[in-house]
Each structure stands twice: as structure tokens, then as C-alpha cells.
Length: 149
Image (cartoon, rainbow, N blue to C red):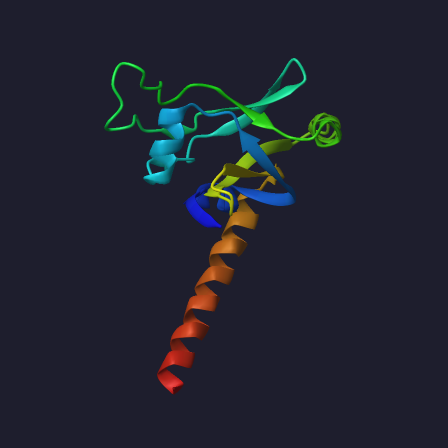
């Protein structure tokens, strides 16, 4: 598995409840750009439209060697999940405060692009402060361990 892009902002802004692996419907020039590492998940979000799950805001740069048949970088892309998973996500989204966020985009062993999405709940300001505090404590412990060695 080769990780192309991680959404660090989503990990900070949301607490993840459950994760899913989804396939993406892509064009040829899009998969070539992804393999070159030219994708960005920072502003991406998922939404349902007529019972199907789509991702918007996923920026895949135009392929450098693509000609007239190049893709639009910010187009809406369909996500592929099992029907039971889609129904489960739709039911959970009806709860207040839950959303679906993309976490990482990667290539699996077969060379297919996969997107890891998560059912998430937004963090409050004090939760974010706790996250920052825990991260700082971990950094201090790691630096002291290095000094002791």
C-alpha cells in the first residue's frame, strides 16, 4: 500500500468514529496524476446525492502530459461502497453533528486508488486544545528519550 495523501486537518478537526475503504471512479489522466502524487484532500468532503456517495473538493492536478482530454481538477467524483455500507452511513448521517470526511488517498497492492473515509463528529475547542497538549507532551517525551540514549 502506497499512501499518496493524508488529511491531517481532518484528524485535528474531527474525532473519528468509524472508517471505511471506498473506491473512486476516476478518469485515466486522474489516476496518472495520483500516481505522480499530485492530489490534495484539504478541502474535500463527502455527500449523498440520490443514494450515491460523492466526494467534492478533492483536487487532482491536471496530468502534465495530458492533451485535450485532460480532466477538470475539482470535479465531483463518485465513491464506490457496498450497498449495506451506504445505507449504514446514510442512517448515521441523520444524527446531529455527524459527517463523512476523507482521511487518506492511497494505492492498494493491485494499483487501484482507494480513499479511506470516516464517519466523524466535530471537535469542540477544548477538545482541540487537549489534542495539542497531548501532542506536545509526546514530543517532549520523545526528545528526552533521545537525549538519554
